[in-house]
Image (cartoon, rainbow, N blue to C red; front, top):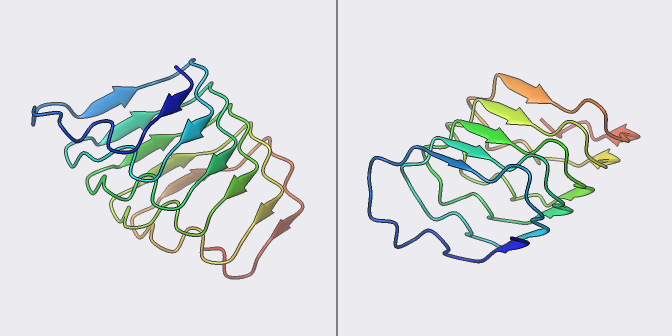
Length: 130
């Protein structure tokens, strides 16, 4: 598995599914609206090969509270990557290749109470990143 395409989970009919685990795959690319599911509260994508978090990738996941993205190759987070994730409380981005944290990247994360950016290559964090 190296890519999760747009609308990959839109036809998932169960309301009982609350977690998705894609840990330890070879995923490189997540498309906008890859995860179109309003019941998922926990998404694990650690130990993959993701390089960029694109705009609106997770925005259709209105109930998401835990997002695990550690141990990837993430070097860039587009400004609307976390758009409308207002219930997200846990975000792990440790062991990636992040150098810069730009303005407003985490703006929509109103409930965020845990953010792990350790073991990156961070050189600069913009004043209005949070």
